[in-house]
Each structure stands twice: as structure tokens, then as C-alpha cells.
Image (cartoon, rainbow, N blue to C red; front, side, top):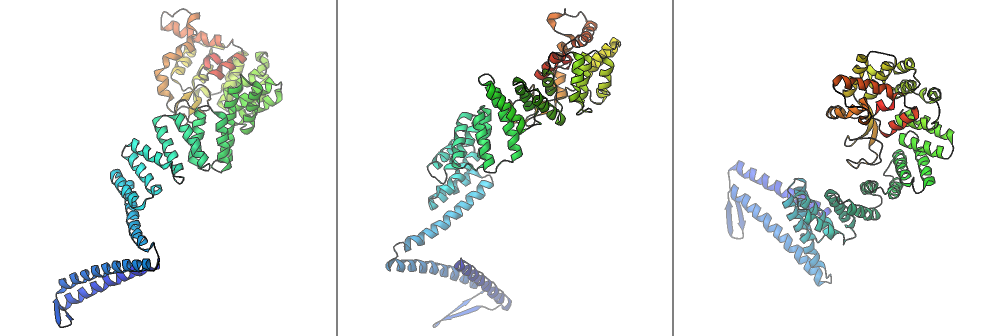
Length: 505
């Protein structure tokens, strides 16, 4: 290092001296006279500069020759590797220069030049652990996937590059859609480097897509162990995995499925599907109080129709009036929430207390006019004996109204009828949230005809309407008939499809 610094300083001093001498010659207008023995040389300014440059080249060559002679002398004195080290240093310098040029070319998008420079660096350095990755990335950049795959496979033979090779092959298989092979490669990669956060996340996602819940939970534990996942995220994901595992075990091992559902609720008490599953598990074991507690805690954080359905299932044989009174334990927690208002309206409609249902709804049909809210108002108006025009008005608005909150994927925006651990569109894990779909209005416009059976009733039970007035009349009658359902039945239907507000009444 010190010798390199000295050489740089000497070079700068020589250049400065040459510049200074050239300025003096140009300023004086005289020539440079050199006398060697009995011979005199007269050099002009330009000739002086050229002579100085030639002298530098001669000095440089002399230095190289002296270095070689010194290495040869050391070889004669017994250092058998002196000469080979001398040439190796030169080759190494050229190799690292080619490697640097390859990196610059790769960053600039010049894939062919990057591969050429990487090949040159490899021939000089004999270090595939340094050059293979550049070659593979350059091949991918140029679209030569076969060349990249060959390079990655070649990296598997070296312990230093094995992980990089496995990771590169895994990414290629993922891009090709070969998730089975990608899963095996991810398992090998995580065995080589268990602390690698990116690889463990890829393995976790693939295991979740394959519904390998046990393997996904093991990978999740590894991520927490090595600090690549916050504990709050771990609890939420573990809760989702436990719930998925419970659904998988419900037929073969119901007791274990119940344990998994209860475990999911303890990890994430505010997770709605977990609270619903835990309530059913507690009731299956005859534990009514813990079932109610799980539902109440989840409702306090996020009122949801599935929670109301599970709360109704706790006492399925009660009368509508008894149900209204029992549900006070739930509805007084978040009285101003739209879900609470609509739930109270449904319960009172079932009990045929339409004034109470109207009071429960308040101005919800104006402030948050969803399909469910407008259909409830149509049922209330008909129950109180309003004109058909009023009822038809609410039903007409319901055709183009928002469907309200649904299970929507935060990655791709797809709407799901029920919560699922993995989105069936983008394959994202735990990406669903209970919210309003951003593009639902356009979807409703295209499928407005599909809502007709929701309003007019089953085709099999009614004759085909003769004209538009008959259709609208049937729509009004359907809302009234829907109020005859038992609250338990309506709650169960809403859990299956939250987009059926008229049937839920």
C-alpha cells in the first residue's frame, strides 16, 4: 500500500515537472540544449515534451525490467515462486480491471459486454465465485435463460457459490410457474442459509400455496428465531395458519381441529374468522361463556356479520323477541357502527317491531347507502305499510348501490365470498381484509341482472312476471317474505355470502 502511494506521488511529481518545464520553454522562446559527452542536442518546446514522454516510457520499462530481474534473482536465491508471483500480480490486476468493467457494463444494461468482460476476468483470475454471478445476471438481462440456468447449475459444485446457485434456479422456476421444483429448491436454500429472510419468505409463501400448513408454521418459527419477522406479525400469521389447519383437520380429527381454532383465537383475539371458529369449538365442548367472550372481544374491535351469525348459533331455538334481548350483550359494545345498526334492524324486523328497526337504522340509508342498508329500509317501509312506490324506490337504489365491506385482497383487489388464507388470484398469504372493494361499482353495473333473484325471489316458486310492474311488485313482496325467516337461519346465510342482504332479513 505504501509503495503504491509512493509511485503515485512520483508520477504526479514528474507530470508537474514536465508541465512546469514546458511553460518555461514556451515563455522564454529558447530551445533546450542537452550535452552528452561531446555531442550536443538542441530541442524545441514540442520536441522537449516528446522527449520527456519517451523518457517516462523508458523509465517505466526499466522499472518493469528491474522488477522482473529482482524476481529472477530471488528465484535463484531459492524462492521458487518469485517469478510466478510476479506474473500473477500482473494477471490479477488485469483480471480485476476486467471484473470492474463487467460490473459497470451490467449496471449500464450492456449485457453482452458484461458477459465478455466476465469471461475475460474468469480466464485471468480463475475465480468463478466472482464471475459466474455476473455472467448469469447478464444472461438473464439479455433473455438467455438457458445460459443463466447452466451457470447457476455450475455454481452448485462450489461450496462458496452453492446457495447463490440454488437461489438463482429457484427464481427461474418461480418465473416459469414450476412451483413444485421451486419449493424443493427453496427448502435446499434455507437449509444452506436459514437466516436468509428473502428465501425463508419465498419458502413460506410456497408452503402456504400448497396448503402445507405444518411446514409453513415450521418456517414461520425459523423466521422468528433468526429475527427476520416481528412478533406481532408472527402471531397474526400463526393464527391464520392454525385456523387453516383446523379446517383441514375438522373431518379427520375434530378434537385437534378445535384445539387449533382456540389457539388461533388466543394468538389474535381480534381476528374475525378465528373468533368464529373458536366460538364453534367452545360450543362443541359445551363451553358457552368462553364462546361468547371470544365473539364479544372480536366484535368490540371490528363488528362483522359472521360474528353475529356465530352469536345467533349459540341459542338457535330462541324466539325473535328473546334474540333481540340477548343480542343486547353484543350490540351495546359498538352502537354507532353501521354493522351494529343493521344487525339491530334485522333482529327487530324478524320480531316484527318495525319502528324499533327504523330507529336502529337511523340515517344509515342516506349516509352509507349499501345494498344491505337499502334493502333493510325497503323491508321496514313495507312492514309499516308504506306505498309500493317507496319500497320500489329503495329496491331500485339497491341495484346500483355499494355492496359494502367484503373480503378483499390487498394485493390484487379480488373480492372473496369468505376469508381464505391464500388469495386464489395472486396467491398472497393473509392479504384479505374486510373492506369495501375499490372497483366494485363497475362490477355491480355489469352484474345488476344477477341481483334480480335476490329481489324477486326464486324463479321456481314464482311464475315469470308479465311486465316490469309485476317484477317490481314481486320485489316488494320478497322483502316482506324475507322477514319471516328465523334470525338463526338469516345469520347462517349471511355467513355464507355477505352479499345477500335481502335473504338475511
